Amino acid sequence: MSAVIQTKNNTKQQAALHDPTWVRTGLIAIALGFIVLFLCLPLGLVLFEAFSKGWTAYWSALTQPDTQAALKLTLLTALVTVPLNTVFGIAAAWAITRFEFKGKSLLTTLIDLPFSVSPVISGVIFVLLFGAQGVFGEWLMAHDVKIIFATPGIILATLFVTFPFVARQLIPLMQEMGNEEEEAALSLGASGWKTFFQITLPNIKWALLYGVLLCNARAMGEFGAVSVVSGHIRGMTNTLPLHVEVSYNDYDVVGAFAGASILAGLAIVTLVLKSLLEWKQSDR
Amino acid sequence: MSILLSNISKNFGQFSALDHVNLEIPEGELVALLGPSGCGKTTLLRIIAGLERADEGRVLLNGEDVTDEHVRNRGIGFVFQHYALFRHMTVFDNVAFGLRVKPRKLRPSEDQIKEKVHALLNLVQLDWLNHRFPDQLSGGQRQRIALARALAVEPSVLLLDEPFGALDASVRKDLRLWLRHLHHELNVTTIFVTHDQEEAMEVASQIVVLNHGKIEQKGSPSEIYDHPSNDFVSRFIGQTNVFHLEKDDGVWLKSAGMSLDDARGITAHVRPHNIAVVKQSDSVSSPVFLKDWQHLGATIRLELGRDGLNGSGKIIYAEMPNEQFKQLELAKGDKVALFIKHAHWFN
Image (tube, rainbow over all chains, first blue to last red; front, top):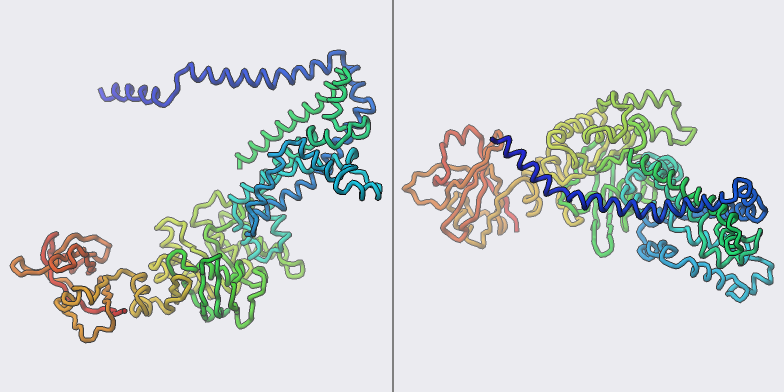
């Protein structure tokens, strides 16, 4: 008798805890449909268009000098901005989580600024500062320093846009960890550098890698800010995303989609690495 | 190593954490910094360690002014409340850390480090855990590893912040005694912070009672317990009944056998074990009756209700040995007479 009551109770409890089947399947269908429609379909289309005229057309589109130059510029930009922003990000996270100072909350807000400002505006800021009619324009002209419509401008704009990634990843983690382990290392006689490399860095390494990865993806993919400062000079100041746009506007479909396929490939590699890192982190 | 603190003050914004603290700790003592939370005890410990800077005052270790010395040069061992073990290192590497970061000239060879770390792990009786990571250890084990790690650099002063705070009651009891024995063995000047007066009484050879950033009293456990220097210490250490002469308590105290002629203050603090309880027959009019009682092991704590007079509803606590309580054959509601054997007077 009591067993019967219990099973009855169990089914009741299950009914109370679980949504009806149609709600579950409905939600899953919507989520999957969205992903297929807005992610998989465009990605497939990019590859389809890139190879629409066969392997050789694809390959020659990739190996033509303008594409090569764009690829090199993109890599150079990432190579400069990612290490710099890694160092800046660690420094900012360290300052915010380890020290008490006036204007700390302001600094925390300002770190997010590049995320909240439209990338186009970020680009315009640099034009206003370093452009021919800009604040430093005359001085730069007089000293023959080219920033806008040249590689330095592209690097500066990318630096600005990708600044928050590393710091954003580290601040919550370092806040949660506290600084007791570092204090312990210092009390045991370790120097500041030894404490950083032997205690802090191992503790933040996964989050740091994750931040660097996101920073890199954005540095290579940034369009808005770079578009404003670059000037779109073919073979000179076109990064890969800009090259895609220029090619597309010239009705060079294969060229545009071949460039896009590289960026898409980068996105997929980033995603895979990101999930690997997340899995590694949760494993610990 | 002796410790001398002179005129230490520390403010956090408007809040005064320490207010001109002077303290001298002779070599080899095991001292408890005792006080309620927020009294400044941890801040004081961190100032001695060099993890915090005093706004004012000097810190002298062994006669040497170390106020401006960095924590890594002070030769102290610090055990953190939550142990702060390096989570990405094994137990062995944790303990070895202090030896491995020494400058090359002073650094022992890897063989010597190995020998020393195993010796320390044997000292804390946990050598068998040397390959484990901190998150695979229990709280009590982490605590002992943290202690071994601090001892590895042969500190002249050992500082422990709430060393037993995060442990189970039973583990805490074992570790208290163990720490006492360890101190006896090593004879390193040791200071630990606690808010638990029982813990301070059980472990320390000297107790410093702090409140609101000031030292209220310093002395051996028995001095502090038997001769509390003020109202705060008396209430904070052990349990105490407080009677106010100005209220009706005066009359009542007289009836409990106290002579008020030698009253030295306006409040009388009476420890529960200084109250003798006698059973009264129902016919006698007595305002005190047994409300409830609790078994504390060797002693029984009586909750005595007092009505009539103005102090109606006030509860007086008395304690007596288990055996004696059995002989009295008291039941809840029985009337009793009290006799106060000893009181401390405060203003």
